[in-house]
Image 1: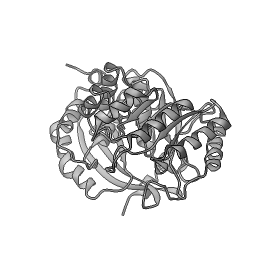
Image 2: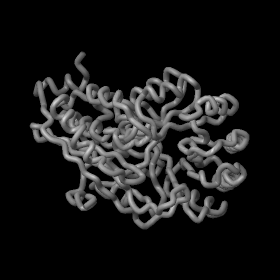
Image 3: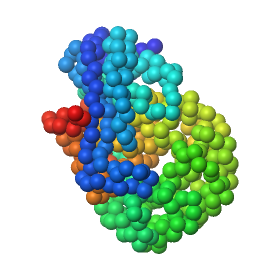
Image 4: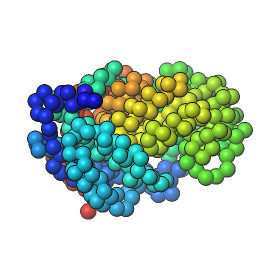
Length: 396
C-alpha cells in the first residue's frame, strides 16, 4: 500500500535516501535555578537528546526528546543500534511505519531512554520539507491553533494559598485561559489542594480552566483510595477539568478504573508510556478517562495518532502530555491538530521556565496569542528553525 507521503514524493523523485544521522546531547539552561517540590535536585536546565537526519537531496530533519535528567550512553545507543537500522534497513525517509513498527516490538524496561521517538520526528520533518507543507497539513490536520494550558510546577518551599492565587492571577493576566497545577507534594491530604483550588475559583471565577496533577502514578508508595476519592469529588465541586495521575494506573489499573467509575471528574494519565498496546490495556479496562501520550516517549507522531484512534474507539479522550523544549513542542502542536485535541500542554513557570528559556535553540520562541492559543507552525515539516548558535548548548 502506498502512503500519502509516498505519493507526494514519488511525483518528483522515486527515492530519496537517508545518508547520515547525527546524535547530540544538549542542555538548555533555565532563566534561573528552580527548586521544585517533587525533586531532590534543583532544576537548572532542559536536558534534551537531539538528532539530525540527512538525505542525499540536501534535506535534513531534526527531532528531539526531552528528559528530566540526562541518561548515560543514550547517544551511543542511537549511534550503535538505531543509526545502522535507519541507514541500512530503512534508507527511505518515507518508510516511517517500518521504523515505528520495528521499535514498538523491541523489549523495553522501565527506563524510558531507549525510545527513539526523536528519529521519527526527524523523518516527518524531512517529508514535510520535501512536500513544502507543515506536517499537520500534510496529514490532514483539523485546526491551525490550539488552546494552551500553562503547565506550572510546584515550587519549594511550598506556596501558600494566597501565593498560589497571585501566581495564577498573573498567568491569567498574560492571556492564559487554562492552567494545570502540579501540587503533588500536598498530596495525599486533599484539604490542602482543595483550599488552593477554591481560592483560585473565588478570585477568578470561571474565567480560567483548572487542571490538577498530583503526580502519583509512577510512585511505589501505598495509595489511600478514600483520600483520592475525597479529592476527586471535591475538585468536581469547583469545576476542575481533570485530575491527573492520582493513582498507579499501570501497576493497578483496576483501582484506577474504580475511581473513574465512581466520580464525574475525568481521570487522566499515561504521559510516560510507550506504544499503543500499553494504552489499549488501560482503555479496555476503563482505567483512564483521558489518555495523555507524549510524542517524545510514546513513539512519535504516528504512534500518538494510533493511540488517539484507540481512545475514540473506547469512548475516551486523547489529550497529549508534553514537557520539554521547542522542537518537541512544535511536534506536539502538529499532533494536537491531527487528533483534534482541545488543548496543548505549555510548560510555563516564570521567571524560571519562559518561552525564551524553553525554546532557546529556536530562532522564534513558541508563544501564546492574546486569547491563550498557540499557532501550529506553518513552515514546512515541523515548521521551526534552529538558531545558528544552537550548538552552543551541546554537552561537552
